[in-house]
Image (cartoon, rainbow over all chains, first blue to last red):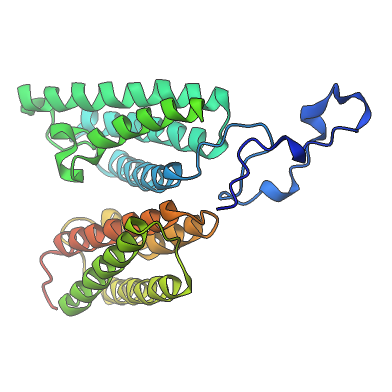
Length: 169
Length: 123
């Protein structure tokens, strides 16, 4: 339970005026992905965020490798599905990076991307049900992510709640 | 693929998920014994990776496509170690929950591997 959330004691106060604080904060101990972000930066990957990091990592790797393999080997079969999978992979990657990086800016980027993800899974999910002929092959977001235990639908909602709560804590 | 091994990996992964899920429910971080469990599951997943590599080297081909099969095989081998690594620096219940989720992902990957290979033919 050694959660260093917002402990100002780590910032060297007596280091000459404190005008260029952000440049003097030591970052040597934060190379591990699990370690706390630099002092003063809002942590997004601790607590429940750790679970989100794992799941977004799985989805980033899964969607990216899948779409890259399909684009290389059989792009002509279902170009729309493969491009949408690639877009999904990019959105997942940005959210993953935001969570790992932390901070207010990353939190906002994460909020926007989670909104895009939710809109994507709802839009593409509806599209695949209304016009299945447009999708000879499945995407991550087909049928609201049914092939992935509906996680593509659940994840952005959970992440939105987490990112909203992270500001107040 | 060897069906028995695939079943063993999935069952071990689900057991690990239940164990770590219980730890998360009790607000306990992952402990040494949990990491021993992760090591066992990872060894099984590595055995699966070796079997897959030997089968491919022997000229057999998965029904669902070579690239997808390899991606799932490698993914299955690294999922639990990655979750364990994440839980190392998260000494709360959420570290346990992360490992539980990683183990569930592994079980799902194993089912997919079985499908992609073609229903375990030759096993």
